[in-house]
Image (cartoon, rainbow, N blue to C red; front, side, top):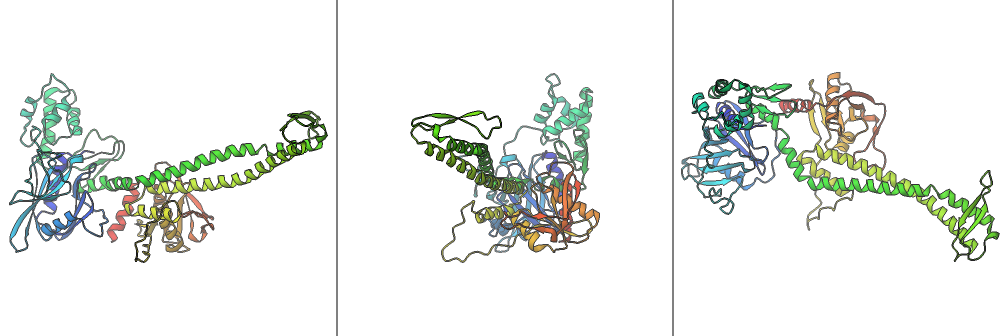
Length: 575
């Protein structure tokens, strides 16, 4: 990926055409680093996402739906106070940097017109979003604070004057004509892509390499022409948003020769960015939130694997149980040959067709009958342990299968799914239950909400994203004549088509969801079983989410996450 100065210029141009002069209706802050503005412009409502995420910082119009906290953070309330009801006066990029100023004209408490500036700085882990008072020139607040103790040259705190990040001494390509560009390069030093990167503002390493690549071995004239073609497109706002579907999975606003294989083109830059980043930031947040949960479940799984190995060693020992019974019976039959203090006795093995002799070790401190009794006791102990160990191995295997399912669910979980998984582990006794506040009645648990998708023909398809949702979907939400699907013999989600007779396309799309939300999401030709809900049963005493089924048919699909986006989009368009 490369959210550089050129992409910033492209998305700024698009926002000026889309939401400039629009009115800010709502502001939400779904996470610590993200803001969502609802802007009404040109008789349409647009959702503008601003993100200061350390890995996925960006800004663009979005179709994604974000879950907002019950109580808005302080910054969100401050932004609402100053910006809601205001009009987007101007959206401008600072030179060719990844810094954009969004000026909003609104009125204060006494009705006077004011100008506030929202500044978005896309700078990796140093990304930030700041609200600045245009008249006073000081910061009202920001997503991230930077006190003087951390940076005495650029303090980002409420009340401090706003300063742009230090300049890097690069030249703006808007002002850098091709002739001056060539004169600034040293062809004797080589490494032309690095020279271009250090010379031109807003160029990413990918673009610098692309300019050199397109110039080939043609020398300065070819390099000049290659730069000119890029600069001309920048000046003309001639963008062709596209994303590479394979390989490194990159995106850009111009066609690049570096993009090998299949490329998807988009009409708008926002659509490309929304498609590319969709889910990435959420997956990162889920990974952080569920890190301790993932470690706990993996440890429990590994503990059961070790337990099985230990039990298998016991089973090997128990295989010799019959030998101890045989020795005990032989010693009983030949007790007259044993003398007090003997450490061993050699007897005829009448179980052996050859009647060979066998030596039995004895405890010299015990009588012959006590030695025989000791052998029979060892036999009984090993025989009993074999039965117990086999049961314990089955329990451990069930535990491993259970944690395999949970680990797969965490891998594909949304933020709202994680707490349900934690609650399930509390209910199963693996985690401590939350202490209940004094005087408070037991909180009623919310109804699980499986994710809803819409097939191409409009049929609803539901996917359980954890065991609670799977059980609710299969046992309560689904009708007995609905179609139930699941990836065959591997951990995965329960999928239900709300129809008893879906067409082939709908069945295939549901199978795609079942394969994508399974442990085999990165495999090819994944078998997916499907049957009627009436043929799906949960065995008594089984772990959450575990079912058995019959009368199934199987189809094979190769998981393609584009189906998830497509069916999710279908559902959004109907909302």
